[in-house]
Image (cartoon, rainbow, N blue to C red; front, side, top):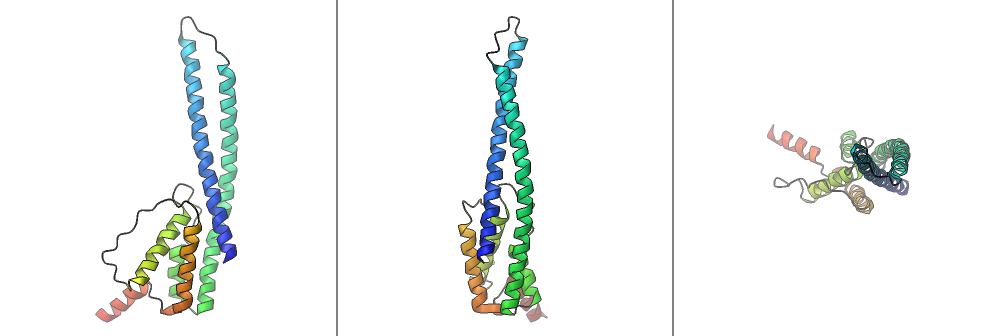
Length: 199
């Protein structure tokens, strides 16, 4: 599990770094527009005042934007690679759980739905970590309530400050699987049982 947790940390840090770089790019773009407006204002004046090195600032700002754009492109490629690794690792973990605890195929498939969703589409504020954290939190509460969650409201997805909360939820969930194995009551199994009882 340590390798999986290391991969989660690396993916989470890459997402954070990319977000920070995008915010920096936005600031630089705003700076560029402000300098550009000042220059245009001076050009429009009948008696233009000296540029006071605005053209140098504009060029420096442009170079910064280009450099940041290239860095962001590289970071996005790196994130796509790590996202795929994370997805494959999560699928592998569910497969190992199936083998280790002799879980049925349907159980493994449902586990994949909870924490092996494709992660390369996430690079914003909400990503794989937040969605998986919410999924497993819901599952933990469902299991603890023995399926009595008619008044349960899904929490609003919020950004995680670090990956520690997610790792704790994963560890706690894996402990439950180790304790109960295939007897663990997942939502789909409860629905199957209800359907069988009604027929």
